[in-house]
Image (cartoon, rainbow, N blue to C red; front, side, top):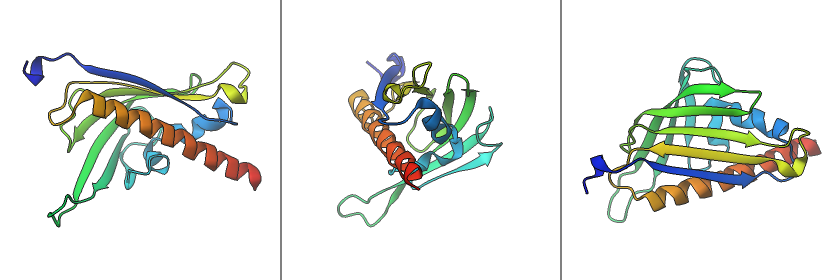
Length: 168
């Protein structure tokens, strides 16, 4: 079956942020131009249009990929992502990739910070869901593995940052 005729790839992942409320975690995630603080694979993320956290703003994210054996060149994987919706009350936002070096087309994602109405610390979770047309050179399993492990890393880094601020 040709890749163009395959249905969209979709995934949804959760990661617990231990010891912190959703209200504490949300300001870290809603900082749209600084996602690289939480994803170590990203070398940079910065705004190229609009104001961070306002619908329509665009960020540029890039990661250096180490050269393969025998190659002296380093590849830069990059994406330009547009914030299409944000709801601070529900602690969620949606974005789309508008251009990338990886061939992603029709990519849409939503990120949520989930917590109980009373913001009990043990109920805080990050949720990341996506839908994308199949991408040439990728396997759905690899994309799922990437997002799942990245979200776990994000949650851990947010825990550590929030814990450090409580100790000062």
